Image 1 (tube, rainbow, N blue to C red):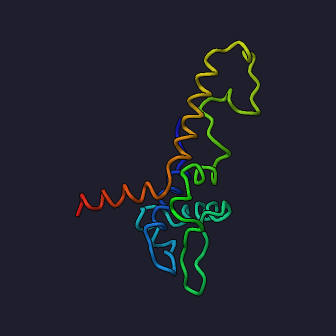
Image 2 (tube, one colour; image 1 turned 180 degrees about the vertical axis):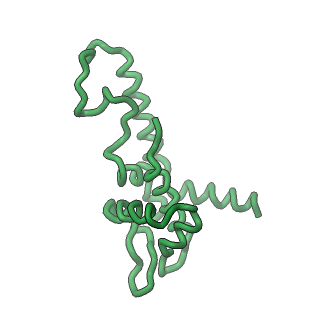
Amino acid sequence: MKFSTKTRYGVRAILEIAMNDSENGIYQKDIAKNQNISYKYLDHIMNSLKVAGLITKASGRKSGYVLTKKPEEITINDIHNAFEPGVCVVDCLSHNYSCKREGKCASKGFWGKLNNQIIAYLKATTIQDLLENQVKLDDIVN
């Protein structure tokens, strides 16, 4: 299983916004520069994050992006769901997949449990958790 670049960059963009404590938010060009993401590609990511209700423009002219919730209220699962309909480690767990082995396959239960563990981990990890890790990393570097 591999997460899309949109999900991975979405996490980085949200983290960058969370690290910025300005009332005016952070500009998309600064997020792109700080996270080494193409501005054009980041535009698609930011739009999806806005549609998902995770970020918004700060009020006023010349404003950047801010979070719509506290960092401890935004999970990695929320960000992932802004780009993908959910987590599905194997095709047979998908609702629109028909398998000839349905009801006869012991491995499907294994994949289902793994899928549920991944979802639980994504739901349990918040942007606040990543912020705290980033502070620790910054302390080591400085």
